[in-house]
Image 1: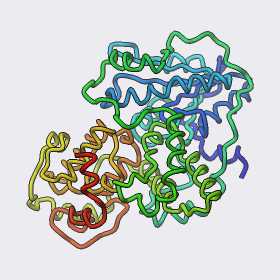
Image 2 (image 1 turned 90 degrees about the vertical axis):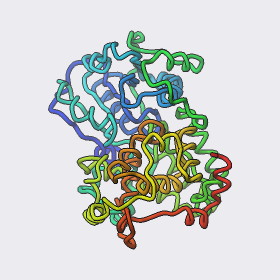
Image 3 (image 1 turned 120 degrees about the horizontal axis):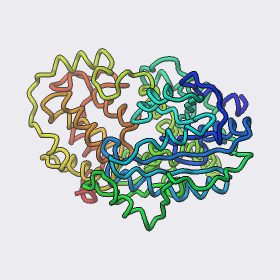
Length: 459
């Protein structure tokens, strides 16, 4: 398969717009906020080259997205200066627009689209991109293309919702080599030479704190104490993972105190790095150092793309109605079971339970914006056990991720939360509250992991 054929499988036109005379092809970076391994940007450049036009990239950050706060704003702003610099070297224009107050105009995208011959953006099945891509295309006269830059195997390869990892895995393996290869570098033949747009907000590292402070957002959620945003930082973390942790991943990744995971999920969510870049780097490093890396690639490709498949086809991502029939039935059967204790959302949010391991996982979320994946499963299972209803448990998990998690509001988020209720899993032995949904215990965590070491760091 040629690069052009592979790219075509990722593209959808979501309206009937026709190419119009314009000043540029506009690429709206909603979710994939990077230059490398960005199929959307590559497609925009291809269109621009065909039309003899330059490319303009628009990236917006508004004060009105759900749960806008200092943590998310800071992480996004930390990537802006590098993006601008790298695009300038490629001859591609860039407008970063920071909408600070809710009373400020909210029309930057439409003003730029009004001078474009076509619009290209990200095909992303969750958060605000899902909403934008459902309502914006019909407001434009020009073509509105969405491009899948999130998955290695294009989401369009799958015609229906897959039941579990074991059903999608063989389908991915049959075609993975067609897609797991370096993308052609983006080349814009015509340079963007217009004057800087009045919509553009200049961002430097020294200005980030004051820019965040000037925005009408929630200032009670502090920036992460662990993660800085941007593609450069994502690449640095990838290199650290390759050198220090890849060889330990299979044996230590489920041992949170060992810190053997990649910690790249925030950068994948915000589009500062792609799963393709990570997979290619891992395979190359593994070949050079004779490592077996199937466990890591299973999580990065099969499990992650199962989540995107779910998000693409599920009518609702935040509802128990999206569960398989067996899980819905068993949860309904046990809906009125007595709970050993019940905590409010606020108590969960403040890490005020009787369980020190659970409190430590929530404190990790509050401090860093992420919980180790293995303990995040325990975190979710206990919220089910200690909430008044299953629906209330779901709402609590989503609320905490929406407000604090740098890798939240993501197909993986919704899938992993619903996994706690039986999605992509199988029935287990029946028990109170959970029915036949998998249960996890503190005793099990103590047998399998060094709970005390983790509590010592996050206590």
